[in-house]
Image (cartoon, rainbow, N blue to C red; front, side, top):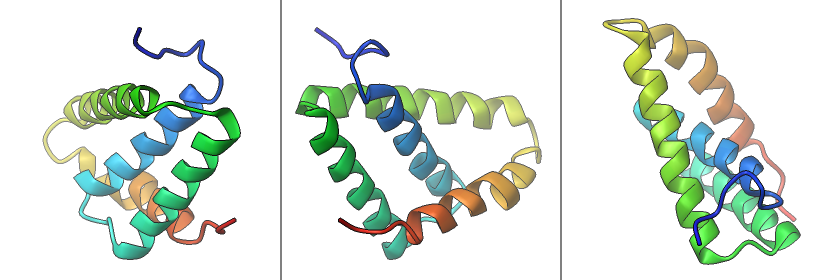
Length: 99
């Protein structure tokens, strides 16, 4: 059964994966960003006992949301998305504390 917003923690996981996907679209994913992403993913997975299929369904949903947002930006409109949102996401992920 696919995971959805009714699974505790799943929406938070989708949002986390969306943020790292946006950094990917904008070329801002660094080792520090990925390390922060993995720390947060591990924490969410542990806090909510998320199964591997939850991670996969969240990844698919996050990819669809990021692609849709990128597509909606139009020619050149993604530049502000990258400059502001992606830069903020990259900074937040890179600075996220470990447990």
